[in-house]
Image 1 (cartoon, rainbow, N blue to C red):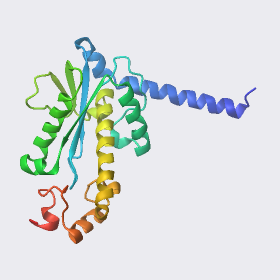
Image 2: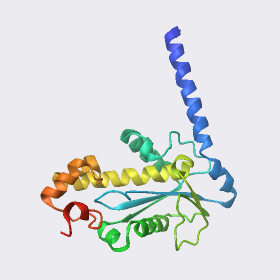
Image 3: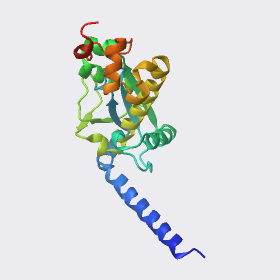
Length: 223
């Protein structure tokens, strides 16, 4: 027979699970609103702010009866939780598309246009055609599929949250690979963002091929 302490622990765990299920269900408001249309695709991006590396967009279509818990804005999750959820999403999603736009293209067309381009690429890579796109805050130009821009959508929609996690994990893994090739910039820890150590390395070693020239002028001039 379980001890009183063990029973209390089980009750607390059950209560936490109940609360999480309620929270997750509250993030399906938009999915329920548009479920009569067919496949719903969440879209989000990561990497608009870094000094180096690509901007990456994720497009995710979850099953209508998805029971994945703990989905949230990727920035609110630990790296370990994001990695765990990434694997679950990739296994259970109806379709996942990922779009990349690299530093040279970002410099050429600016970061906003590059973000749109990455999002269009992510949608184009889906193996099924969505009926509607739920986007984190933006309306993507040159897309014929109906779109719903949702402010802070990665914290309000399970589909956008899933896209946020896929994009974040994909980009973080890529930056870790770049770190192995160019360890002086510490990309594994800063992910290309302008940390003090990254900026110091930039000034000492100059830019590398994945730095965004339009983002680093204040630090290195027009090298």
